[in-house]
Structures are given as C-alpha cells and as structure tokens.
Amino acid sequence: SDEEEMYRPNFHFSPKKGWMNDPNGMFYYNGYYHLYFQHYPDGNTWGPMHWGHAISTDMISWKEQPIALYPDELGFIFSGSAVVDVENTSGFSVESKTPVIAMFTHHDMEADKAGEIIDETQSIAYSLDEGLSFTKYEGNPVIKNPNIPDFRDPKVIWDENRKQWTMVLAAGQEIMFYASKDLKTWKLLSTFGEGIGNHDGVWECPDLFPLPVKGTDETKWVLFVSINPGGPNSGSATQYFVGDFDGKTFTIDKNFQNELAKEHSFWVDHGRDNYAGVTWSNVTTAEGGKLFIGWMSNWLYANEVPTEKWRSTSTIARELGLIKGTKTYQLISNPVKELNRYRAQKFIVTDISVEGETVLTTSKTVSLSMTEINFEIPDVAEEGYTFILSNSQGDELTFGYDATEKEFFVDRNKSGKTDFSDKFTDRIAKAPRMESSSKLTGKILLDKTSIELFYDNGQTVMTEIFFPNAPFETLSIESDNEKFTINNLEIHELNFN
Ligand code: FRU
Image 1 (cartoon, protein in one colour):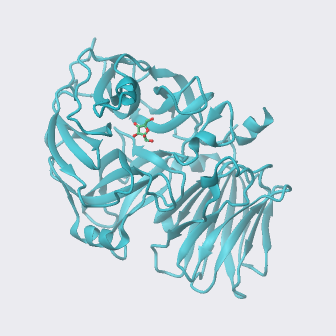
Image 2 (spheres, rainbow, N blue to C red):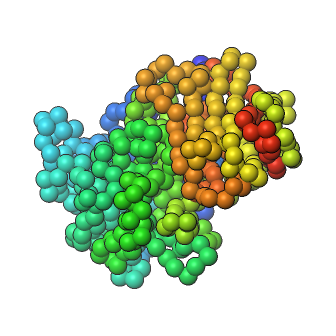
Image 3 (cartoon, helix red, strand yellow):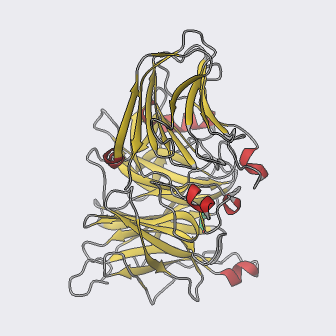
C-alpha cells in the first residue's frame, strides 16, 4: 500500500518482508559489511527466529540476501555474532577457504513452553562462502545450559595477545566471559555485573571491545549490556561500562564506577529506539574506533508499529569512540563517515535571530524525509530552544534543549499515528547534556519515520521513531530567549538513487 512505501526508510535497513529485531553477526570481509538480523520472514510480529542477511560496501545502502540460518530441532536461532577465522583455528576450512563462524543461541520453544529454565544453549555454524550460506556444526550445542535463565546472545572477539577467542554472554543478571582456542570448546573465565549497573530488566546482547581514548595513548575496554525493560525513557535500552580486560576478567574503572553510583547508568543512546546494538568484527575505523548498528525499535511497542508487510528498521551505522569527559570516560557515537557520500542538495543558513516560531526550511528547498542537518548554537546557557517538524496534516515532532534542566528532549506525542500503543507516547524522552560549554553543536538525521540526534560530537545521542500522516515538510525553531541565535545551519538533502 501507499502507507507501506510512505514509511519505508530511504537510508536505513529494513527487511523486504516480515519481522526484524536485533542486528546479529556483523563482520567485515573482502570489501563487504555483513549484517544479519533476528528475522521472522513469514509474519509481521516476533515469531520463529531466523537470521536474515544483508550486505553493503558502505553500511548505508544494503542488499538483502537469502536467509542465512533457519530454526531447527534445537530451537529458534536467537541473537549472536560472527567472526572471520583467518587462522582456521576451528579447522572448518576446506581448500584453504577462510571460514566465517557464527555463534548464536538456540532457543528451545518446547522447553520454554514447558516452563523449563534450560531452554537456551549456544551453538555454532560455519560458512565457506564468505557468509552467504552456513552449515550448522554437528556437535551443537557447544555450550549447554548450566541451569541459568536468559542464557544467551554470545559475542565473540579475537584476543590477539593470547591467541584465543573471548566470548561474552548474557547469563541471568550477569555477563559471563568465556575463552576458546577453536570456537568449539569453551571455558568459563569470569562473571561481571552483580550489584553493578542497571538491573531493572533482563540482561541481553552484550559486547566487549577496546577503544582508544581520544587525545591520549590509553586504551580502555567497553562492555555493552542491553536491558529490557529499564531504559532511561522506558522499555529497551543499552547501558555501557568502561574498564579493563586482562584476557580473563573485566574490571570496571574506579572513577567510572563512582560516577555510575551517582548516575545509576550510562546509556549508549537515550532515545527509545536503539536496542540490542553491537559492533562489527574484523574491522575498526582509521582512528581505532568500532562500528555499531542497533535495532531501531523498542519491545514496548515494536510488534504494533503501523507497517504491515514488514516491521522495524536498523539505526544508522555509527562509529564509536571514547573520550575523557568532564567526570569520567564517556562513549561518543556519530554516524559513519560513509553517509557524507550521499550528500546532494545543500542549503546553508547563517546567523539566524530567532523570534517566535521561525521557519528554517520547507520542502520546497529540501526533502526533510532524507536529510542530515548540522547546526551550531553559540549560547544555550539561557533558555534553550525547540525545533518543530510539521506537515499539512497538523502533525508535529518537536525536539530541543531545556536550559533550566540541562536536558535534551524529543516529543512525539503529536507526531502522527500514535494510538497503536499507549506506551508510544506515555512521556517526552529526555537526556542529560554531558558537555558543559555553552556552545552547542548538533547533527540531526531524518529518514521518513526516524530522528537520530547526535549532540556535542556524539556525547549525547537520542534515537526515536514516529509515523506522521504525511511527510514532514517544514522545519522551524522557537526560543523564549529574545537574543537567541543559531548559526551555521547546514541542511544536506541526501540522495540514494
Ligand atoms: C533482544 C532479544 C535477545 C534474543 C532475541 C530474540 O532483543 O531478546 O536477547 O536473542 O531478542 O529474538
């Protein structure tokens, strides 16, 4: 229907048909970025989980591929990761082809229905055609369930120092660290998480990776743990921890832990629609950063959003970095640089004095359904501001900064179709500003049904979805401060043809 196409994103991945949730098994090899995903191809709500597959040369334009993993007698194929086994540690190589090994959770639905705890085990599959097709290992599962509920989502990384694989796994309310020499035999190393961080929901989809601290010689380890519910604005969200990893144990940084005790949690994204995200294996950016993608929805309403043929999209792929912030180490995330290649029409406004509601651009100049907007505000210390996206139907999405509370916000209460779930509009999403300077820079990505906000060079990020009755066509700004100005507003229409 027209509605389907109206909501199909321009530059975010969405499956051709059927349901999608978590990104899975991302790796880079021979010029291709691979993205697998939790997928139910035969229905538009969560169901028997497969791994769908898509490939890209730039993490922006995706080509969907045949399904990579089907459910089998051990269960549904839940989330997991994939690695390129360059040294053939697994022994799966044939004719010197480099194997790609996927490690995932088998979720036994029969056991689940019978109320048994041991419904989740870990299994592997290998590919000898660079990730296009997989063969499941005959020795599955490779890790049996030690009687722990919610025992899932293995993320494997190569430990170059010890020439072995490290794997992190969500296990009840903790993360378990495992090691293996061949990806088949796994040994438990340690656990992390008791009494630390947010435990208001189920721990899922962990990730562990090193990041260089910008402007220093230091490298720190970052541990991601997705949690559902318990997010900062309700529902699903991803928390992170910064510390060190010695090949065996993750030790949280003291300073970070102190701040954590005050803050309760640090979040990868404060919006309601970035969940279960993890990083690409076998690749880093030139600066040593990691590449990330998340599922752009929330378990609160993911099954009810108003699309029929397909459901859910991914976030924009992001580069992750680490800085020493005002108080402790801080994760920063920004869209991958590859997005810049799609900039087409450019529209620049400089030094705008904002009086009342001031129109910045209309769809006559650029399409606001495929846009990147960069802005700089010289002084947000006084009153803050509100951006307003609107259309002919009277729908409005507002977002901005509240200077009194020192908080960013996104309000989608009047953004169009909202009545599919009470949870969708039960509050205005808010996020604390981390940066203390009065000058604010921001990047806004708009793609039909989503907004991704990157403030202060990625120190605070908010991702939210919405479903307007017609495309948004006007962008305005409003401020209570009489002297409010915005400079260097750059609007880039993006071109994907
Ligand atoms: C996270 C999650 C994972 C699980 C998958 C099932 O959204 O619950 O923990 O593997 O979804 O589809």
